[in-house]
Amino acid sequence: MASALIVNPRATRVTPELTVAVERELHACGDDVETLLTEGPRHAAELAVEASQSCDRLYVLGGDGAYNEVVNGLEEDVAVGFLPGGATSVLPRALALPRDPVECARLLARSSRERRISLGRVNGRRFTFGAGVGLDAELVRRVDSLGRRDGKRAGDVAFARTLGGILARRLGRLQPAMTVLGRDRVAFALVANCDPYTFAGSLAIHAAPKARFELGLDLVAPRAVAPWQLPRVAAWAFTGRGQVSSPRALYLHDVDEVEVECDVPTALQADGEDLGDVVSVRFEAERDALRVLVGDT
Image (cartoon, rainbow, N blue to C red):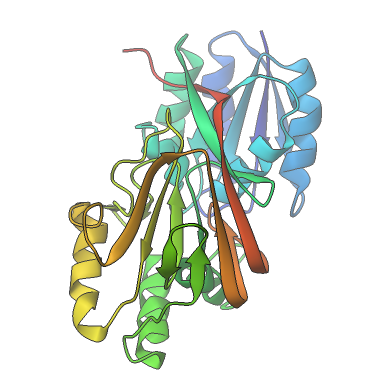
């Protein structure tokens, strides 16, 4: 069986030694595995275009940015195994895969089990676990602006500190800044393809607790946030309870399409990647779009 391993050597946890260890696990099952190293932005998508046309399986060792590029480059319905090489690696964690990349490679290489999941699209670009317009996208952009050491993005402490700075500058208030068309005015919008939405260290963020890989998209959007409401919003995120039925938030479950119009150009992100400023945003569910490798039960 022909397979390819796409590796982002600049991902936070990826080293030459780790790559060799992962290769060893994949080769141990007798697969013919070709390793392809990315050389810069968008290269993973280019590698995925070619690899998906000639391989039975495609493995990706990197972070969520590499996973996002690969699913946007796929041209064939090939099974993909996601190996955690980034600081957070939301997608494999949301798929309940091992956090150790070597253990994950061993599990997937020996497994015959697949799972078909949905993907999201935002303005035509695929995403695997989540996208957002407004607050979280601004957070991604500001952390990226801190720069990268040896090509590696700043970690959870930087994200927490930066979020605190954003809220402090706004005095803890988030006013309505966009419209979910046909629904309501909101302060910002998160669109999830699964639960958890992301992670803060070992803690799962349950922004959209009803979201599932096998369904359409879920949207959660606070209508407005005052300083006294910040603890409640934090509780929603960490417990996954309250936002679905709260009159202070708009929650849409298992939708195929939703559009957002921003009052001014506003930051947009998908899978933790900054997609620039937008005024109009169209989120779409792409049901049963991707075959993913999972462990045998």
